[in-house]
Amino acid sequence: MQRKYHYAAVLGFCLVSLLLAYRPWAAQATLPALSLEAPAETLVIPFIPLPGEAPPAARVALGKYLFFDERLSGDATTSCASCHLPERAWTDGQPLSAGYPNTPYFRNTPTLLNLAFQANLYWDGRLSGGDLESAVRDHLTEAHFMNADGQLVVERLKQVPQYETAFREAFGSGPSFGNLLSAVSTYLRRLVSTASPYDRYLAGEPSALSSEAVRGLALFNGRAGCAQCHSGPLLSDSQFHNLGVPQNPLVFAEPLRHVTFRRFFRGFGVVGYRDLREDPGAFILTQQMEDWGTFRTAPLREVCYTAPYMHNGIFTTLEEVVAFYHQGGGDAPNKDPLLAPLALSESDQADLVAFLKSLCGELAPASWPEVPPYQLRPLGDNS
Image (spheres, rainbow, N blue to C red):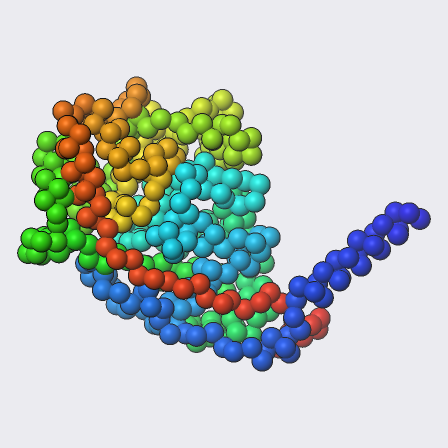
């Protein structure tokens, strides 16, 4: 008998919670429609032209609403913007990503700027830059990111008349998981850097760089050897290198983070994942020992906004990063042979930091949109 009362109490609590959390469908239908004009942050002049034709404004705008909407996660408390905040250059400013509740992540959150130009995605490069939709799918459905089920997310969106209308405007049909991935990816591809002082200097404006930054540029391209890996429009060769980056002790000091670490590498078939004490990096893709501990060369645009640095956020300042390279990187059996101690003075190192700061342009401000409240249609209403 007590068990029956217990179940009844739980059911009653759930019903009351639903009544408090969800507004009636009729009331929701009276809310204003979503603005489907292109967001301001997607209209900036990029440092180089974006590839392809401009997408429909409605699709970009819908993608922004979805990016900031927590209902895309399993428990409806986490959005893409939870770890990629526009005010922090689309990072979270933390050494290690918070991840989904109770599954904290073991890598640093990279910026989302300039995804349209990147050859590969993630620190280990496990997806092609041309397959941004798959990256969005992974972030929505991976247990340590947003832990969502695609079908459930679509059903949630179908409960919202504003989203029904917006999807039809953007795609000609109602919410679907494929169109959701397309909308978010379309928005992300429009998040780009503007021209930096470095770009203006290259375009013939000598005063765009300070004398310190000019000396730093000469070191970057010359004696310091930075341009051997940090080259091209994004200042990245899109290749993978082992720098001997020190381990972040937080990965192993926090039990839940360590569990996420081991679970992730178990999923990629890493032998001995239970005993791992370092991140294998791109090894998970190739299973070749020469790739153990290698990570994608980080693009350097907006680098002054994206601290902490390295795949595990172990360095908090650009000065620390430059000092690390000055000493020839860290210790690793297969450390990249390009790394060797540099004969840099303190002023040389300061000049390099000055140049790195010149790679930062003015970030386009991005407001947080007001997403529709969570809601459910009345039972039996399938219109």
